[in-house]
Image (cartoon, rainbow, N blue to C red; front, side):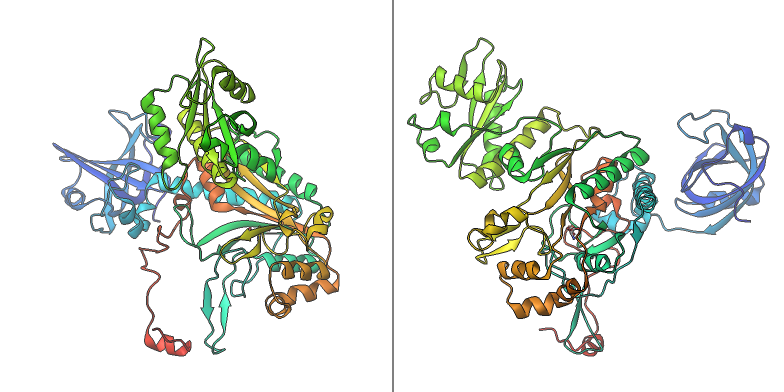
Length: 581
Ligand code: ASP
């Protein structure tokens, strides 16, 4: 028998018992005639003890050889500790060693296996299997496991069937590049890895599965940003005979259930906002509504007073930062520098301080009198002691910049509390999005998203105006999930492909199978997919999805542990009918 107990198990009640423990050496302390070994496994740490004079020389010899991360088996008696440690679950006891076996020696690890490690990110990723020994890291994966199990419980009890869909497929249009896999058997032909199971889940609806889900890997060859992984996990779902409202209700319930089960948090009902409102009030399709500071459009108050910058702007927009009138010159300069950074790209920042005495002080006093500034303040519902921050320029850029500034102010004022969760549905996304580079429309969600029937009249005349039955779930400014009601009619789907600039042949080649399926009785259907890694990070109170993935890739899309991507042999290339320039 390797062990009778694990290393987190023994308590004072076990005093006097003979036990066997196995695990890794956390640390060894040798003081005078006493030698302690902290033995660690997944469940905790137990202290082992030997003592010169009482412990046999053979055992002491072994114990003195032991180093960090050796794998040991120790047999002995549970004894009460002389000095107890109330920070450890097993801190009342230790094991007086009667037999000690080294099951495996270990090289000294390249960083300390402690929550507070001295190892840098790259080194820890290279030795991820050692990093995973750290309790804090293991806890994150445990949280992931719990979320996964809770998801399955909810979906199962709600009548969803988990169906696996293939990984070697052909292109799915989620707006990224495909990873492709060359076929050895079919020269010159390629599989693509799924960007999502989108087309398959729709086919499952045609098959009558009614309610489908899958916790599934998706692959997108996108430019890497800080918090992106080329492969990631979705909770992917689809339902038949539903309208948008049914989907919103079902998945609101799911997310409430997950918060309750896994975090013990009751989150309230979800707010709802249209895409247009979100853009107008927050300059973002994923607003963080843990705090207010909505945008106030000031064109009517600020234009025509001789301030050229505002007069020429498409949009003059402000936010009211409560209680911030005391910001110093230095702080305001720092904010100006912040909005002028190239990533944000504003040309400057105008402020109005609402002084306690009812007067106003602004950076544009030359152009605006007290009455003018009062009108701004009233429009923004600013009170004495508040600070208005104003940006101007073309609508899209200005909203984007103001979104960043609003988030920054929310953070500076401590309003973005990680323990507060404010969920939101953003509804009525545009169906299409104009791409300046390619000079054509793209599906904002994907080409299977159904337009709002009442907007279909614009399909030829003004396609950009059509709204979709598409929705995103946003929590605390993070897009957690998104989906849509689908087109289930072949003719409409064809129209959609046409609007997206597909020729009939292209559409047929890429999605002919789906359009054909629609001719065999496709039910009305819709669905949603959640970014599972992101959900884990949110539950764990972290910004990084990488922490919640057992073996993640780095910022450059590399797995530095297994060294991938890597070259392949010329034989392999030949077999695959490939040559590399
Ligand atoms: N397939 C979509 C995505 O991955 C989600 C959906 O429409 O259900 O974003």
